[in-house]
Amino acid sequence: MSAKAIEMNGVRKAFRFFTLEDVSLDLEHGQIMGLVGPNGAGKSTTIRLLMGLLTADAGSIRLLGHDMPHSQAAAKADVGFVSDDMKLLPQATLAWHMDFVASIYPGWDAAYAAKLLKRFGLHAGQTAKSLSTGEQVKALLLLALARRPRLLVLDEPTSGLDPVARHELLTEFMDVLRDDSRSILFSSHNTLDVERISDRITFIDRGRVVASDNKEDFLERWRTLRLRLPDGAPDWQLPEIVHRDIEGPNVTLTIDGFSDDFLARLGAPIQEVHRMSLEEVFVATVMHSRQMQEARP
Amino acid sequence: MHSSLFISQTDARPMYLQIVEQIRQRVAAGDWPAGLELPSIRTLAADLRVSVITVKRAYLDLESEGVIVTRHGKGSFVADAQGLAMDMRLAQLDAHLTAAGEIARSLAMPEPELIARLRNALNTEEPSE
Picture 1: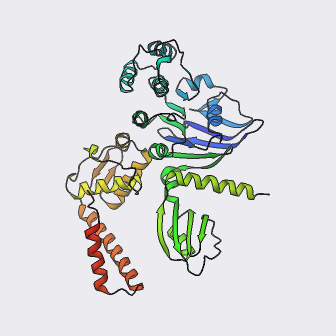
Picture 2: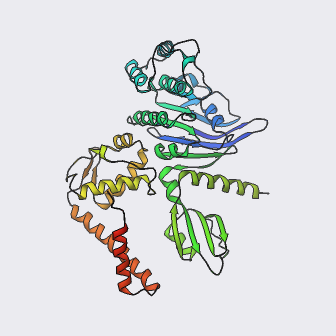
Picture 3: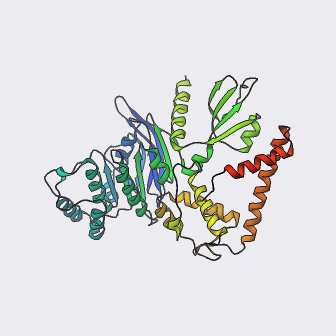
C-alpha cells in the first residue's frame, strides 16, 4: 500500500467556456482532504476527472495506485463515490438498493448497513421517492459507507442538509478514519465543516489550484494585524502582505506567512494580532490569486 | 476518559490549542496521573470529530512541553516528571509578566497602577473552567 490514495499531476481539461488548468493534488492514506472553492471553480470537474467520468486532455491521475481512467474498474472496487446529482430509483425501496449494491461489491457489510440505517433514522421499506432531500443524501452515503471502501469521494455531501444531519454525517466520516488505511476527499462550501475535520485543504478558483496545504500550516500562516500609524503607513514592499486597508492612521494588514521574523521586518508597533478562520483565509486567498492573475500582462 | 474533552467552535483559540490546554489542566489537577495512557491520535480525533492532524499537533506540543511522552509503537502517556512541565509554565508566566512590565515602562505607567491593573484583570477574567 505504498501508493497514495489520490495522485493528480498537471491535469488539464478544456471546455468551451471553462478550462481546468494544471491541477496537481495528492492525498495520503488515512487522511481527509477538503476541496474548497466558489461555485463554478472546478471542484466537480476535478472530482469527475478523478472518478474517470471525464478524460483529461493532459496530465496523469492515479486513484489508489490505479491509472485513471484506464484502470477504473479495478480502482472503483475500492472507492465509494457520492455526488449531489446522483439519484436513487424512485419506485424501489432502500432494501432493494442495498441488495443491489451488495450484489456488486463483495465488501458489503450488512451489519454496518443496518446500524447506519438506524443511526440515520431511515427504514429499509421506504421507497426512494418518499425520502426528503436530506434522507436521499443519507441513503446515498449509507450505500457508499457500508461497502467499507478504502477511499470515499464525496461531492458536496453536506450541502442542503440541516445542522443535525450534518453533525451525524461528520461523525460517520470520523468513524471511517479510525482505520488508518481509509481516506476521504470531499468538496464543500461549508468551511466550518472543512476546518473541523480535514487534514489537508485545497482551494480551487477559476479552474486552478490556488493553495493546497495541511490545515494546521494553513491556519498558522495567516493573520490579520491592526496598527495605528499617526504618520501614515509606509509603502511596505513585503511579499507577506496580501491585503492592506488604510483609513487615516488605522491600518489593517492581511498576512500570509506570519512569523517573528516578519514582525521584525515590518518594524511598526502592532496593536492587535488576530488569527483567521478558514473562511477568511479562503476569501483572502481567492481574492489575492485573482488580483495576481489580473495584474499579469 | 477523553470524553470529557470538548472543542468549541466559538472559541477564538485554534482547536489544537484547546486540546493542549484541556489535557494540560487535567494533568496539572492530577485527574490524569503520571503513566496514564492517552487515547491514540486517531481515537481522540474520531471522538472529538476533529482532524487527525489537529490532535497530532496537540500531542506534539504537549510532548515538547514535557506533559506527555510518546513511545513509538506503544502510544502516549502522561509524563512522570511533571515538575519539568511546571518549570516551563512558570518560565512562560515570567516571560509574559516581563513583557507587561516593558509595555508599562514605555507608557511611563507607575508601578502601583500596573499592579492595580493586574489585580483588575484577575478579577474580571472569566474563570477558565
